[in-house]
Image (tube, helix red, strand yellow):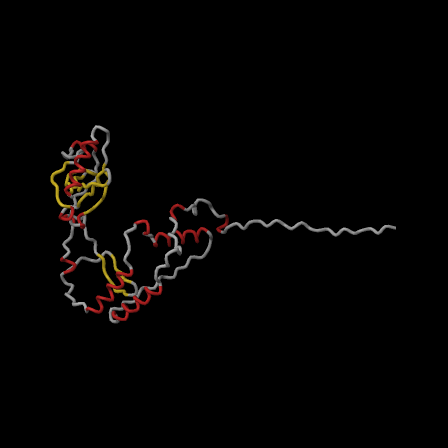
Length: 272
């Protein structure tokens, strides 16, 4: 029996949607944790407390992505050690190998993978084997399904139409944007909509029809032609000063309009 899901929702590709459950791939339940109440315990130092000990070198392709944890940049401290640092870095670069070492972080010894990264090293801490759950607990009960060739071709066409380059700068936290927008409305004294977003209906019954409609939708929203400027990237809302100035009375102050000068009619006296 699989553990309880961490998240439930829908998997959606264009107009094709189906309900899914998401499970955490790692667990910390087996870790030994305690609160330090006596600082003298710091005398119990692990041997690699201030040293990154390289134990072996392995091909990068052999490291299972589920074991990757946190990343760190590593650079030499002084000019004397730069040459040795460069030798280790370039030796790994030439062999396309990753160093596996040991480092103590936050009172815990971690395995760290080191690989060349520009002029420095990128260190990525790795999870221990007991922290990664067995995928078979979640996938063994999924039956083998033979996908019809025509459906597969339609799905591949959708994938090709959405193909692009990896650009982290284009990632947008829409949830954060919605929260910021809601706070701006509250600050301005405007009513906040409580309407919930409609959940996409599962259309696995009419999958072929959904795939065809997805392709039609992609064609209607094709990328703009060359020479035309596309939609600009959204501004980072966290850099906006929208919460730095209070709004009196919950409403924005309207600018005062200068009164137009009154014109006085001048009577002309007739000369006698």
